[in-house]
Length: 92
View 1 (tube, rainbow, N blue to C red):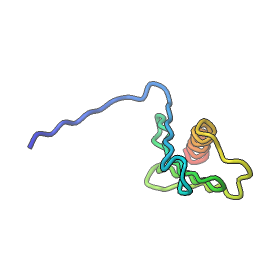
View 2 (cartoon, helix red, strand yellow; view 1 turned 30 degrees about the horizontal axis):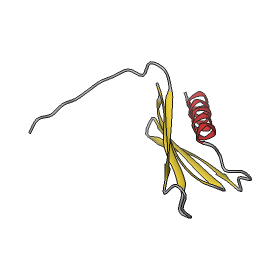
View 3 (cartoon, rainbow, N blue to C red; view 1 turned 45 degrees about the horizontal axis):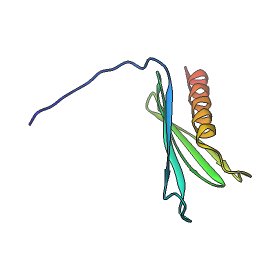
View 4 (spheres, helix red, strand yellow; view 1 turned 90 degrees about the vertical axis):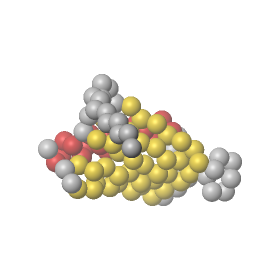
């Protein structure tokens, strides 16, 4: 068995979002925001979104419900970044 390990630095934060089951009744969005302190993952439906971030062995979560208008991919990535930075500033 061959094994390859990597170790890379994060130059600047970045995020991505994928739409799953596009055009169906089961459509949802999922993605992540990566920055120097870790990775914030998110899941979103038209009226609900959840964000999760692990920092120092603790899972931090944010749930948004009763969303009036579905969040765009950009809005989800921006919200994930804000959530991650807020957690880091509150717990470091």
